[in-house]
Length: 344
Image 1 (tube, rainbow, N blue to C red):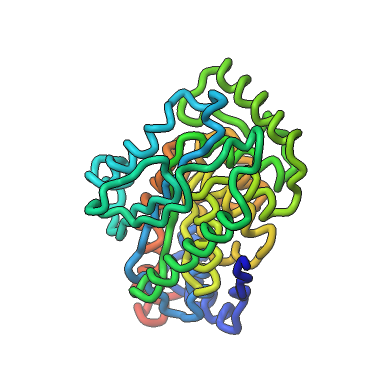
Image 2 (cartoon, helix red, strand yellow):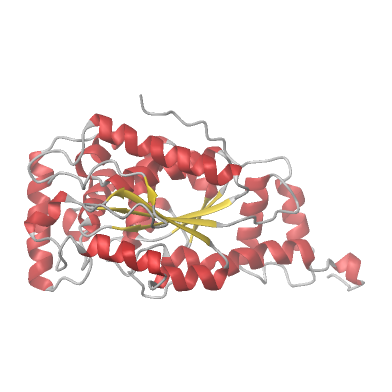
C-alpha cells in the first residue's frame, strides 16, 4: 500500500513577529527583496524567529527509461551508468557545485540498467533495470511504483534522523525529459508540443520525432489520476523523488527544487498534497522548454535564471548560499533599535 502523507501548512502564529523582525532590520523596507521572502518562508517552515540550516543534503537519483528505444534522445542509454560513475569519481558539475557550497552529496541507483560494483559509494535502491517502454505498456507495475516511493520515503527519514533540515534532489537518466514532458502535459493540460524541449541536445527534427512518439504514447494510455500517470509514464528515479519530497515536507524540511525533471515529480506531489508547496524553494528556471510553464502553473518565483538545463541538481546546489544568506541576515543583522539607527 502506498503511503499517505500528513503535511501541514506553514501558516503560523509567529508570522507577524517574523515579518516585524525582517522589516525592522537596518535597511529600507523590502530592500533585500527575495531574501526577505525566503527568510519569512524558512522561519515559518521551522516555526522559529531564528531558523538555521543543518547538514544540507543533495540526493541524486539515477534511473533508465525504456522509451529511449524509440530514439527520443541523441545519447544512448549507457550514458546513464557512465555518468553515475562520473558522479562517483567526483568529475561532474554537481560534484563541483556541491563541494563548493557545502552540500552532503549522495548518489542513488534507483533503476539503472547496469550492475555497479558493490564497493562503490552508490546507494543501491534499484527497483529494476530501467522502466519499460511506455509507448507500448506502462513504465512500471503497481508493485514497482510502491517500492520506488517507499524507498524514497525511507531514505529521507534516514537523512532527517542524521541531522539534516535542508534537502534537494537531482537526477540522471537518459530519456527522463520524455517522462517529465508527459507528466507535465497530463497534470497541467498544456499541449505536449509546449512541454517538449531539446533534452540532451536534440535538433529540430529530433524534437519533432520526440513529440510524435510522446503524442502516440499519450493516446495509447488512459492514465488520468496522478499516481496512475506516474506509474504509466514516470521513471524509477522520478517516483523515488516523489516519495522523498513528500516525506521531506511531512518532516518540515526545506526542499530546494531543481529543474524540469524534479519539478515534474513535484507536479504529481502537489496535485495530491498541495501543502507541499509551502516547503519548496525554487532554485532556478531551467532552459528546458517546458520548465518556465511548469513554474507558471505552480505560481513559483525561482531565485535564478542562468540558462542552465543540465539537471543533476545543479540549480539547487548553486542557490544554497542565497538560502544561507537569508537565514544569516535574519539572525545576525542589527535592528534599528539595537544599532541605535533612526527609523522613519
